[in-house]
Length: 317
Image: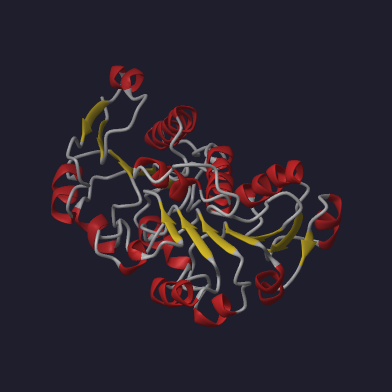
């Protein structure tokens, strides 16, 4: 049977053990670069995660590798050109985590707007003595303006959720046509205008050289002091040093982050000291349904590649 290294324990692998020899990393932390090379050497396939750096040197160190299947939508940890040059198809899992990630973006938006975490902490600290009219006042989501940076699958799904809240939706995306915007009741605009006008800004753009630190000091200064910035895309889209200074200055008023730079954030990172910054540990696709769908998608890509057939979702066709 083909031998496959799976670089982290994921759910739903049991059926595949009947036709593949699976070597699964059981460590609490990802394998080191050396460990990744050693465990992949001699394998036909690799199921990788975003924490695995797969560059030209890596591929040269595992000459027998035939297929890589990424357990994620993004593939910015993989040198796709280097893989293609060596005849290695790279699969990924678009679509299956759209709704879970959109749910998380809206969850963070609501939690930030209504002081959910500070409120829970207030109760746990024994401070709740009576009902107070001015306690932990937040911002209304219903009827507010939502800015979406990146109007792909997930950005569109967030816009769909916003309709129940009667939100005005602005969007920035190179793929959003005027016809599509009009049909979906979305206003296509510039990044600067979106940042100036939005009460909530939700980031859904992929990480590319053009989007690295797309949101920096200049962009943050355009936002309203009452606005909330939500990121469920990639941490590197926001300049963390600029975000820290902007939040300290109160513009924007709040940030809610599912992804960070670096990731994970060390406990002493300045952002974690701020009362107006909520950080959760990359939970965007963390539902049982989404994780099982990711496993099925990743393994379908893997097995197709091992058979020499086109992958359902190939990042470097």
